[in-house]
Length: 99
Image (cartoon, rainbow, N blue to C red; front, top):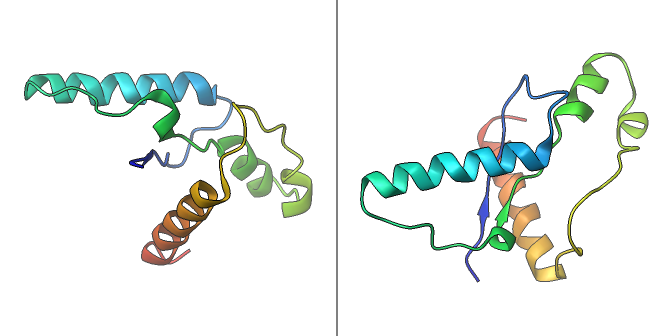
């Protein structure tokens, strides 16, 4: 199964993660259209883990445990295979960025 993970950068706190995902998908689709291409993925195959508020909380002095007290929103949880792929990709990105 093909999947796309969109990873936002800094200064994304106090934003709506669902709205950001829609904006990013719209921008991607606009770029694809310029090449006469269409988005081959469904919304469920595109993941946008939003962590902007958690990061700003930690910068502000909260512990990781305090910042982790976040309400998780979204559809049903992914399968263990999907979660393993996402975890592997995020780990790879973190290692590449020296995090």
